[in-house]
Image (cartoon, rainbow, N blue to C red):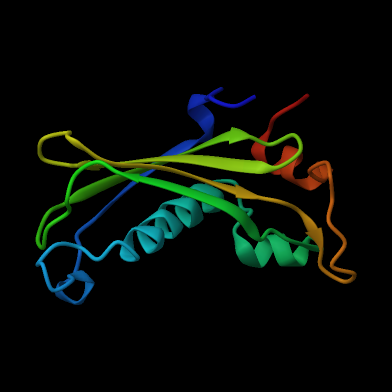
Length: 142
């Protein structure tokens, strides 16, 4: 399923980096990008009523086990960013692909993806197939 994208499983947010996000070189510190991805991922999952509180209530934790970032261009203070998050895998793991662009020009600044796996909350047992609740919430089938 990598790279498969269903338009229903995509969401975009806009944000503007704050002054405290800058590093000594006056560009956004590399670690802040992970926070921007988190904002977009949470907004995407909220569309399906399966954000972190609902995940926990369903009996599962979804830790991130892989994070990949490719920095393409610098993000500067005051720049409006568009952060696009798309669920591209949901069978054995939850993969979200991201694209961060300059909202004004459309220029690509960062490409990324995260991988999350289901873990039974009570026992901490790793699940090798995503639980049915994820499929139900996303409205997808095998």
